[in-house]
Length: 426
Image (cartoon, rainbow, N blue to C red; front, top):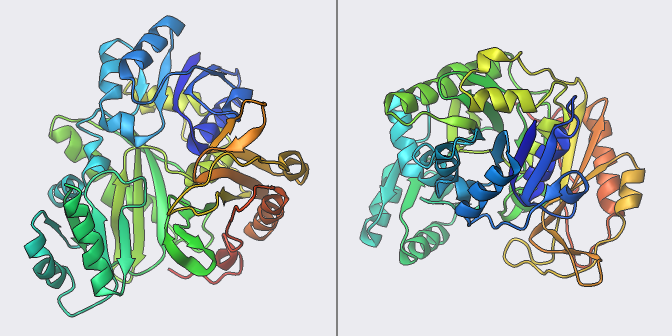
């Protein structure tokens, strides 16, 4: 099988790494890829924004399956054009990708499907912001939750107890020409659950938890994700089945009813609140860095699962199988991230990290003119480790992260710490 993965980050490196473990091994291609991906697949210098070139590449290579990693090409209609060219695609149409591209659209779908989620109001007029906050926080409850309605790479959300900070973020989004979704705050631990869909059926993967705040102790601004772990030893019995029954399957059924079937990966971002499971958000693709730990634990082939979904027949493949081992990922971020991203700094220590039993996945890396590996983004690398339990996996990942040398970089040292200590209680 020939597979083309579109993307250049850690999520795509994780997908390709897992595909490379399938037997028989697929012939792997990536566009544009990164230096880590280039060790496993043939990389092609095609921009994520150039859908025509992606279609031409897939045709020239006689690709059997295209896997679209990031959200931007999905929302832009890459899957539609590839399908029109007769190529199997794992990834939703532009119409279906609105589940991620528009939070207000996702809320409308959830209301129609009876999916439990936070109360919310969409604001387009700055004069309505004060009243909107009162509506979703009627008793003066804090924190306030303010979200940009469109794509924001995981950084368009502000959760704050400071009313003025909430209003400032909302005004900045509106001033930039967007709309704002004000939401009720959801208490309880968060869970990420990936669900593979063929447009009609749903197959869940293993749940994970990620860490959005930049610094230890959940301090600092929101990021695209600073680490993740799986499994969740504290998760209630039957959680995955409940989410499929009350969230994923109703959403997929409603999308099909609307004439926009969702084929690909439905990312369910959830809060286990005191009132039950509630949806925080949907994404229309694999999440990063949860993908790194979820696919690390996958013990069954990935390519047949993705192809079956793309071809509309998940009944044709067995249910995924999972390792009993734990996986932990720690993100190495560049100096200044997430506010800024210093690039061009040399990265060393990868061999030392891997010598400790870790895997290094590239997210924001490049080769300079001298061939040195350098930073090229905010989240630069993910250090991934397995263990017999979370304590062992996180200690290995922590040690591996310490072995990476990148001037000015930072990473969290508390990924999975509370879960490993048995302190997370839903």
